[in-house]
Structures are given as C-alpha cells and as structure tokens.
Image (cartoon, rainbow, N blue to C red; front, side):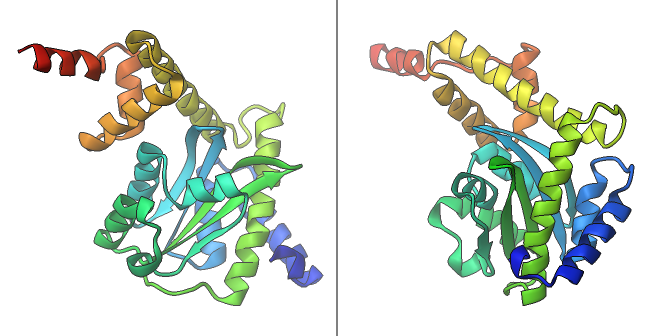
Length: 245
C-alpha cells in the first residue's frame, strides 16, 4: 500500500512521475506507468457510472483486452471500479472469475498471464482504473504492489487536474477523446432505447451484445448507431414473426 511506502520513496516516485509526464499527451501516461512499474503493459480507463472511456493503453495485448472489457462491461477493470478496491489476479488460467471467461480466454490466447487493476480515487470520487498486465503468470513483487498503489493515487490526482485544468492543450487530447467516447456510447444507448422502447440499461446491453457477437469494438458500434449506419432490431418483433410463421 502507498501509505506503507517510505516517505522518501513516495517523494521520489511523485517527482519521477511528474517529471516523466510533464506536458506530454495523455497517451504518455500508460507508457510512464508500464516503465515505472516494470510490467508488460498498462491501461487507464476513465469511468462514470456505466459509461467507460479509454484514456490510454500500452503494451502487448493490452489494447485487445481493454477493448473486450469495454464491450462486455465485465472484467478486472469493472470489478475494481465497482468495489473501490484493487483486483489482483496473478493467474488468469486458474483464478479468473467465471464471469470473466471471455476476457481470460483472450488473455491466455494472446499471451497475458496475470492482471492487476487499481481504482483511481480522488477526494472520495472514483474516476477510473489503472490496469496492469504481465505476460507471465505470478504475483507482483512487494515493491511493485507498493508502487501500483502509489501510482494509482498520483494518477487520480493528475487526471482530476487534467479534467479541471483551464490550460487547454496540457494533457487535454486524451481526456477529450475519453469524454467523446463516453458521450457517443451514451448517445447510442439513448437512441437504441428510444427506437426499441426499452430502458437505457437494456439498450446498453444490446449494443454490447451486438459488438461482442460480431467481434466489433464497442466504440465502432456506437459510432455506427449515432451516424445511423446501424439500427439494432427488436428481438420481440423477430420472435413474434417466428411464432406467426
């Protein structure tokens, strides 16, 4: 835990993080986290209720796994955000929850053996999640665990500042992209809810199911719905036609 870290080490990490990030684009945050922790990959997700937006991804296989979590609405990132506690799975082949089955299967197939997700909390507000990936199964070292907890605090503070900063262009593009992603998914779910006359939650489930069944990123499906290139069918109408045939 970060509060167990020696004060001098905490100060070193905070200074190094600030120095590495500097005025870089938001996509640099994941690179910095992976390098500082010495892990295979990292992803940072901004989350607001059921709406999810990627801030950045870095490392082998991380993009595919982050995309799958967005599509399914399940995985270590979601569990960490909902619980407000770290989710540590050192062996995806044996210890992944059954609800993560598609995530775990893809992770193993592309060569990811372990995943560790840390909620990003600032002033009691949950902002998102830092997810760390390792190719080889096994736990993180004690030092890595301490530094993951410390980085989650530093990231939460940084993202909070990024979100509220009046200085446009400083770490702005990544935040803007994530907000745009969430807004488009939210708009798409609203359109599907209105078209099919179903609750927003069910509409979001329909969009995720379509994305997963057709192996299309959730963002692409949402974009097609908003642009009116795609209209999801009403399953009830389909069942009624089958019964009447």
